[in-house]
Length: 148
Image (cartoon, rainbow, N blue to C red; front, side):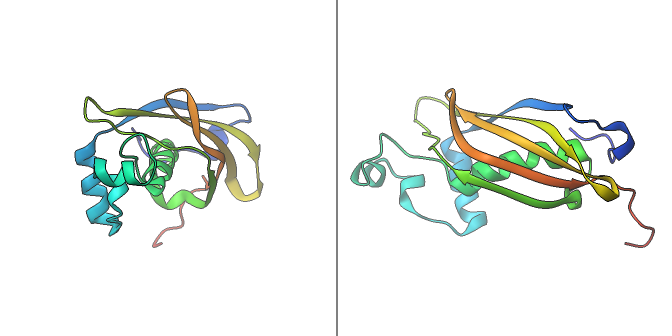
């Protein structure tokens, strides 16, 4: 977890973030559905998932993306430091009834940009399979201006 805002001066190319595991169980999927207003039944109903040709209920893609973002914001020490975040959805996170799924996120600083900004590239896997590809965040680590 974050221990204050990270300084751009303390960050270099190749710095690693994580790995960090996030457990997803069905109760968390239902809570996320309520918060996101995404009630697609493939995220909570075995019957709906089966009708859709899925092996079981799957996590919301945006929830998976949010977990990747959480790694970055905790590392940066400020959720407002993320200026840009993008990814491609490349796989599913099945969430069975027998136990939670584990999503593992890790990142690497790949570029130092002007103004104390850095690029972090992320890998996001569930069950040793990539579920997000080309996940990339631009993070502003410059000191905050007073009053902002």
